[in-house]
Image (tube, rainbow, N blue to C red; front, side, top):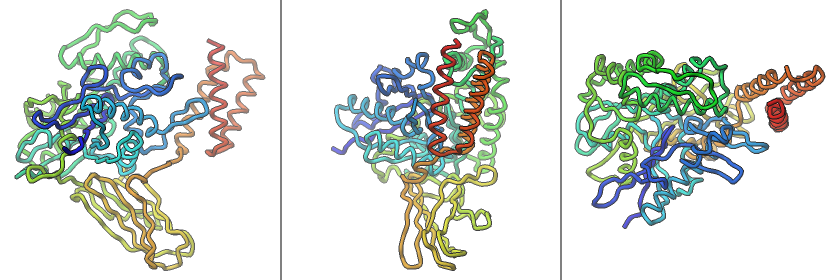
Length: 517
C-alpha cells in the first residue's frame, strides 16, 4: 500500500486537508476540535506556539502576537517582532501546517510525509518557494504545489472548456481549463490579490467603527480584532438576509445598529466590479461553455448577480464550494494515470533586467509547464556579474531574485537558464564559459529576504505615532529625550543596531503606555 499524500488548502481564514481513501473517494480530514476546517491562525504565548482554534481563542488576550493572513506575506520581508526575537511568515505558519499534518495522522492512524499544497495562481516564484520551505519545516519530506483553480478543476471532473472563479478570503483566482480524454489543460490563469473576502471584512469593520464614532483603531488592538470577527459574521449573514441587527462589543457605549445588505454591497461593489470585468475578459476571449464558482466569497449575492448579468449564469454544483480545492489537491497527489493528467501554465512573464535597466523577457505568460529557456549574455567588465530576475509585466513587475557570477572577466559569455517545473517552482542556473555552474534551487528562491526600507520606515512611523499620543502626558524634558531617541534610531539605518534600537524603543513606549493607562 502506497503512503498517503495529504492535500492541503491553506486558506487565508480557514485551512482544510483531505486524503484519498480506497473505496471511499476523497475524505476531508476532521480537525482535532471536531470541525471540517481549521482557522488559519497562529499565536505565540508564554507557554509556546498555538495554532487553529486554540490560537483563535487566545486572540483577544494576545492580539499583538496572534497572526492571521500569513499566506499573503510568504516570500516578503515581513517580520513579527516579539521582544528581542523576530519571526518570518514561514516561521509563523509552521505550527499551523504541523497541526494539519498531526490531525491527518491521527485520522488515518499512520505517519504522513508527503503533501500537495494549493496556492493562488498568481503566486510568485518566491512565494511558492517559501510555501515549499514552510512545508518542509513542518515535517513533510515530499512537497508538491498546485494552483487553487487548477485543483478545483480536477475535483469537478467536468469535460469541455470551462472557467473557474475561485473567490477566497485572501485572493481571487480565475482560470480557463479545457478537459478532454482525461487531460486537464489550463489555457490561462489570472489573479486579483486584494479583492478577497477578508478585504470585505476590513471594509465592513471600518464602516462599523465609523458608525460608532470611534477613532481609528490600531491593527493589533483587541477591539479591532473583535470588529473584524463581527464583520465576518455579518458578511456571511447578509448573503442570506436583507439586513441584520448588530450589537457592538462589550465596553463600547453605542446602541444596536441595523446593517443592510445594500450598505454592504455599496462597500464591496468596486472590488466585485473589478472581478466581474476580469472574468468577462477571459470569457470573451476563450468562450468557455460553463462558469464554475468556488470559495466562500462565491456565495455573495452581488457577485452572482453581476456575473449572471454580464457573463453567464453560474453552474449549480453539488459539491461544497469550500471543499473543491482541497479535494482537487488530494486527487493531484495520486500518481498520474491514463485517466488523469494535468497540464498547467505559467501565470506571469519571467525575465531579467539588462545592464541599462531594460526588461528582457525569457519566458512568457501562458507557456505550458514544465518549461525551460536559456539566454546568453556578456559581462561588461571585470568583477562580479549581477542580474536582477523579475516576474510580471508593466506596473505589476517585481524583482524576485538577484543572481551573481563572481569574478567574471570582461566580455565573458555567461548563459542564464530558467527552468520552471510542473509545480510552478523556478530553478536558476548560471553557466560560465569554463563550464562552472552556479544555481539557485527552487526552494532557495527568496530565502533570507532582508526587511525592506519601506517596511522599516513604516515601523518607525508607527513608533512615532504612539510616542506622539503619549507626549501630552510627559514633561518637556521627557518629550525631548524621546524625540532624540527616535532620531538616533533613524540614523542607525537598517542594520542590526537599528533592529536593536527599534526593539528597545518599542519596549520603552509599551511600558509608558501601560503606566499612562
